[in-house]
Image 1 (cartoon, rainbow, N blue to C red):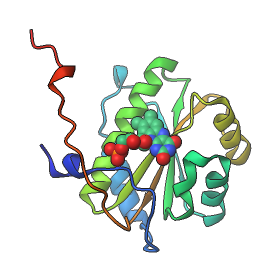
Image 2: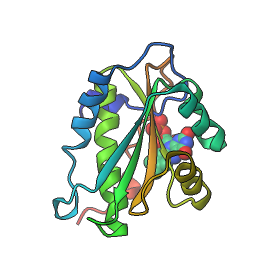
Image 3: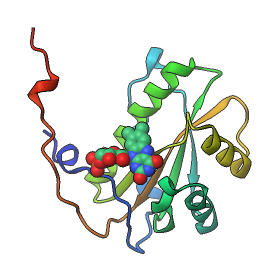
Image 4: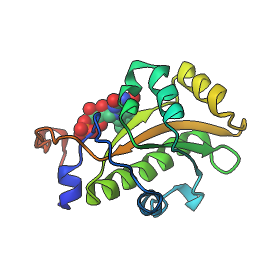
Length: 164
Ligand SMILES: Cc1cc2nc3c(=O)[nH]c(=O)nc-3n(C[C@H](O)[C@H](O)[C@H](O)COP(=O)(O)O)c2cc1C
């Protein structure tokens, strides 16, 4: 297994070190290598760089609490003009997982936070960032340098597999 996959974990506390635009581009490039249904690549991104916007997301709800220390965040939106709703979730999840692994490979920490299908969260993001109606905010990913590593569990579970 790739080390970055083995060692990736959600990080909810980050150091003061800034994540650079070059680092973000490298992470986004990895996301854009993801598979998508009919290769529609429906992901659209809003890169959040300002402290006041990160704090606004932090204040939306408890599940975004790590945004107070994150250096940057990437809002991942699905374009409903190019993809059906069900595939938007799958395509964006593939996109996000690639980003999480690339970030880990670069020594960065991330946390995947869902937005859709929570209506209240969708509204909070729409009100603050004014997305057009065709864009479904699927998730927001916090990015920063991790303060610490938590213990990792081996999740391999034979009972979840049927070998035919
Ligand atoms: C679809 C999805 C939504 C998630 N939403 C949140 C969230 O809103 N806030 C949060 O702190 N973590 C969120 N997580 C992270 C999970 O809590 C985390 O992946 C899980 O506990 C396993 O831990 P690990 O990522 O360290 O392996 C989400 C993960 C996924 C895949």
